[in-house]
Image 1 (cartoon, one colour):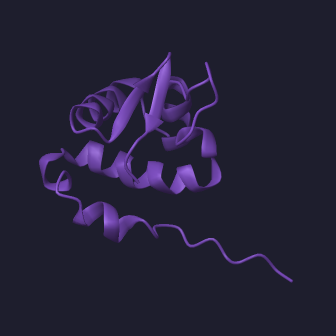
Image 2 (image 1 turned 90 degrees about the vertical axis):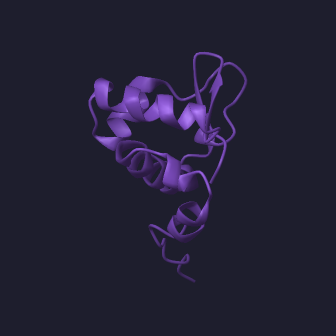
Image 3 (image 1 turned 180 degrees about the vertical axis):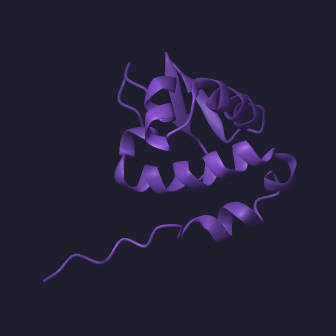
Length: 95
């Protein structure tokens, strides 16, 4: 039996309906949508093991973004409680 097909963007409707969505700049909106899809295949983004959270460099690599672009998006996502600072990295709190 084949595994069910992965449908990318399946979180888009719930994320875009969130009241925090309209308050975020475009870079943070794009990052949030992409991070919800990445969190489906990378569980450590949502529930990092003790002492090992996803680093800024990893997020930049996964989203093909520069550290400056990701820095602005992450600051906005942290302010709105979408991301949470954990140890030396980040955890996706809202998905």
